[in-house]
Every structure is written in structure tokens, then in C-alpha cells.
Image (cartoon, rainbow, N blue to C red):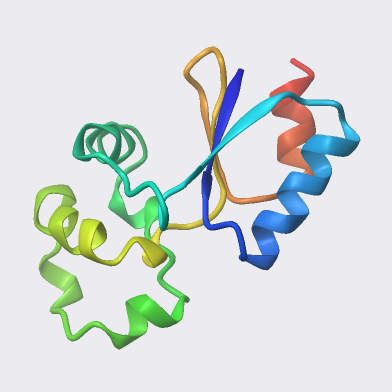
Length: 115
């Protein structure tokens, strides 16, 4: 069963849940606001996707941080992400085959589930 990571009350997450339900895709939901996010999972995401992909650089949380964003890398941003989980793009799908799909895009999701 795939895992969808995000925050329950996010509008994009609501669209993602609806899409999964309408397409009869079984999933488990990990709300990292309620259940936190372990460092090993974040390390895997950072190693696979990179921090620039994972961080929602258009979001309020990111914009409020007073950081020298030009010197960040996967290691220096990790504690910042763990303290500010809202800055992670949503949703992040962890598919059964280990593939990750970041963000909600109906066409991308169709490709991911029908290959």
C-alpha cells in the first residue's frame, strides 16, 4: 500500500485524497504535523529528490525564514525542515515500488499509476 505524506487540512492534499479515492487507490496517510517525520525518511527524500524539490519555496513558511538561501544544501537545511515541516511540498507519494511522486498533478499521477 502506498503512503501519502502531508498535512490533512491542506487544499492540495484534499484534491489528492479525492483523486486517490476516485481512482480506487488504497493508501495510508502520514500527517507529519501530527505524527512528525523521522530523520531517516527525510534523509531518503533529500538524497533522492534534493532539497530544492522538497521545499516549497513559494510557501509562507519558507518566505518567513531569515536564511542565506544561497549556501543551503541537503545537510544544512535538514534541521530547518524538521523544525518547519510545513515547508515540505505536498503531497509526497511513496509508491509501492519505492518511486516518489512530489506534488499533485493529475497527469503525472495517471502516469505513475498506469505504467
